[in-house]
Structure formats: structure tokens, C-alpha cells
Image (cartoon, rainbow, N blue to C red; front, side, top):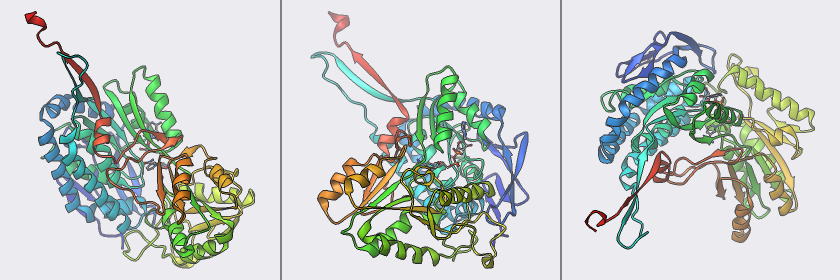
Amino acid sequence: MSGGLDLRFGEVRIDRQAVVPLWIDGSPRLASSSRPSHEPATGRLLAERSFAKPDDVADAVAAAAGAAPAWRALGMVERGERIQELARRIAARIDDLALIDALDTGSPLGAMRASGAKGAQQLGLNGAVGIELHGSTIPATATGWHLTKHEPFGVVGAIAAYNHPTLFTCQKIGAALVAGNTVVLKPSEQASISAVAIAALSADLLPPGVLNVVPGGRDAGEALVAHPAVERIAFTGSVPSGLAVQRTAMASGRIKHVTLELGGKNPMLVLADVDTDVAAAAVVKGMNFTRVQGQSCGSTSRVLLHESIADHVVERVVRTVEALRLGLPDDPSTQMGSLVSREHQQRVLGMIDRAVADGATVVSGGGQPDRSLGLDDGAFVAPTVLTDVRSDSHIAQTEVFGPVLSVLRWTDLDEAIAVANSVEYGLTASVWTSDIDAALSTADRLDAGYVWINDVETRFSGVPFGGWKQSGIGTEQALLHEIESYTRVKSINIAVGALSR
Ligand code: NAD
């Protein structure tokens, strides 16, 4: 299935022979070094990618800094219209972008299409709502006028994770550009092709330098964070990388505004009064076994089931995950693809082994999929369900970022909430009950930035998404609120009549 790949996005050709360029100052550019990139699901060569080094990043930042004054001067309405047009172009090419993302990450085509479409939608909404970014007038004195304005930072450095490439490109550039900043985006080195394709779609829409894309590794990310012209950094990735970003920012000797969207070990707390079949379906959905093989920051990977319903829910979950169709990402019938790399596959398998050594029981999966599926060349891990998980064990405390669900049981709600809150992370949480009082009070007591009641996984444009505790700083997806986060407030005080007194 994965043979055909022959796409063109403006000046950029994406096929198995082409070298995918960087995008700097409105044009494709080959970096001094490149790396072969292989499809994680098959091991087959996908493309050769230009790999940005710190010098390339410096060029991109210089282009962005040069473009910033004119982009800002364009005004909100014009910027918003161009961003909306870029969103329409992305939506029109969503099948092609989804194919690239599916081959690049190993996730099923349908999942990449859905999340990419969501990204295009959010980009368009950001373009539309920017005009509502009002300042205020403040009655600080009787005669003076006191105003606030939101002004852009200049150059935004954006760094993204690999699991939803098109979605993250849209999310990382939309609010920042609408606010009047220019952007240097460093996509994940593991899945960077669609970001370059999207930049190429913007070529005749955004003036040169307004959007720059520099696929590269950690050193490129560090160079972007440390650059003195980059005052605002928007980062999505793991907690250790987020900490490293903060260290780099500090070591640069500059004050920087850093937002961090990091990992999670998210609890789903199921009370005894639920429809157990509905809850079991939600357990599977919340873990993101399908779509991204568990590789979502918001996955509810710790399920806390009331003792009285636990056996039934586990039995239903196991039955459902064992029926999932594992396969190649570009096969439309595939429900579950591969992880992003062999290295990550080995890390996930190692975490399962450690969980078993710590006393957990594998009730489904636990290793690579059955050989009869013919997926041995890819980074596949079978959907895995673990029971007898101790709340203080490594697997219960640490993000796997793979298809591994830990099931814990409880009888006392206070203790269950304490267990839910017992991790370093605080990204998402989910509560299931038909008792409205229990639902609301439990939601209030959970240490997480994004809580669902009787739902999982769904994200809502306009609703702030962001982590507490070690899961991050700041929020995204909240449209106007997010656009504002890419601005600095300037207060202007007018002394009316002062010169004529
Ligand atoms: P990662 O931390 O390995 O890499 C993320 C990005 O950071 C990549 O572009 C990488 O090159 C860059 N990077 C790594 N070290 C850096 C450094 N020292 N300085 C600057 N940049 C650096 O994460 P990943 O494996 O790509 O993604 C998985 C992680 O991301 C998980 O922990 C997941 O929960 C998290 N994530 C969070 C969200 C969210 O919205 N909260 C969304 C998606 C993924």
C-alpha cells in the first residue's frame, strides 16, 4: 500500500527520491546535512530530509526578525484573512498531508486526516477571532485616558512533538502569526515533512520570513530557544525536554516567555453507578489505542475502576482491544498502526517488562503483535492491558506514550482521588458517574488542567488546554485567549489637557 508518494506543494516536491528542504525566508533551502527517514511501520525509506543545524536556525531567525515589522504593520484584519486562507489551503490538501503524516509517524491515515482537519479548523478560527483582541480603557483618573494595547513579541520560536504533525503545525503557528509575530517552527525530527509542505502552501500568502520551518534535532531546538531575538517560546514535548528548554532559556542570559505543553499520566476515575459497557468503550477511546497507539499526551492511561464493576469493565476492554485491526498506516481498514520508531517500541516494551517485574499482570498484549500479521518490520506494540498495578509502581507513575493501559481498583472515593493525584503530572483527567454531585466535587478535587465528566479525549476549540504540575505552563487551543498569550500588554496613559494648563 505504501508505495505511491508523489506530491507537490508549491515549490516543494515530496516523493521518495526528493530531499525535503527547510523553509527559510519564503523559499525552500537544502541544509548542509540531510538524513534518511524511514517509515516506522515498514522500515522502508520515506524521504531524505534536510536537517537544520544551529546556523540554519540563525538564518531562519534573521529572516523572521526582518519580516516582523511589516507583518505587524499589515494590521489584524489582513493578517486574519491570510491565516484563514492558509487554513482553507491546508483543508483542501488534507488527504495528502494525512498520507505524509501517516507514513511519517505510523499512525492510521484516518486519524491523521481527522487531527489535521481539526488543526486547519483551529487555524481558520484563530484567523477569524483575532480582530476581537481588544485592549481596554481604565478609569484610573477623572481626566486622563488610560489604555492598554496588545503588541506582538516579534519572533516566536515554536517547537513541536511528533504525534500529530499537521495539527501541531497549525496550532503552533496560528495564534502567534495572528497576533502579529513571525514564527520559526522546529517540528519534531521524527515527523517534519508536512510542516515544510504547509510552509510551501503559504508561499504567495505570507511575506518571506513570516513563517520559517527548520526540521532538525535537539541542537536546532536549543539554538532556537537560546537565540537572543527569540523572546517568546512555545514548546510541546516531554517533561525532560521541557525542563531542558527552561534551562537553555535561563542559560542564554535573556528573559524569555516560555509556554510548555508536556506529558501526562492521566487518570480516568470510574464510579460504581455507570453503565459499564459505555465506560469500557470510553476506557478504550481514552487510551487512544486507535488513532495514535496511545501516543497522545491526553491519553487516560491509568484507569481507576470501582471494585464492584472492575471485572466486567476489564473483560469488555480486553475483548475490544483484542478485536482491533493492527496494520499499515495507509491501509484504510487499519485501526491501530505502529509507534513512531524502533527505539520507542523498545522503550515501551521495556516499560511493560518492568511493570511485570513490579507485580503487574498482563491481561492482553504485552509484546509485539502476533507474527501472523506480518508486521515484524515495523515498530508495532500490541494493545496492552495491565491489572494488579500498584499505584506507586513505575508504570503507574510514568508516562509510557504507547498503547499500555494500567488498571487500578478502589473502594473508597477519597483514596481513589488521592491515587489519581499521586503523580507528578497534571494534564487531563476523566470522571465517570451519573451522580452530578459526585461528578462535580471529584472534578474539583483532581489536580489536572483539563477534566472531562463522562467523556474522554475530546478537545474543544476555544477551551483552554494545558497542564498543571509537571505537565506544563500555559494553555493552547483557547483562540482569543491563546492569541493574547503571544502578545505583551502596553499601557498608555494620556494626560488630557496637561499642555494647556
Ligand atoms: P520530545 O520532548 O522528545 O521532543 C519534542 C520536541 O522537542 C522535538 O521537536 C525535539 O527535537 C525538541 N527537543 C528535544 N530536546 C530539546 C531541547 N533540549 N531543546 C529544544 N528542543 C528540544 O517529545 P516527543 O517524543 O516528540 O513527544 C512526546 C512527548 O510530548 C510526550 O511526553 C507527550 O506527552 C508530549 N506531548 C505533549 C502535548 C501537550 O499538548 N501537552 C502534545 C503532544 C505531545
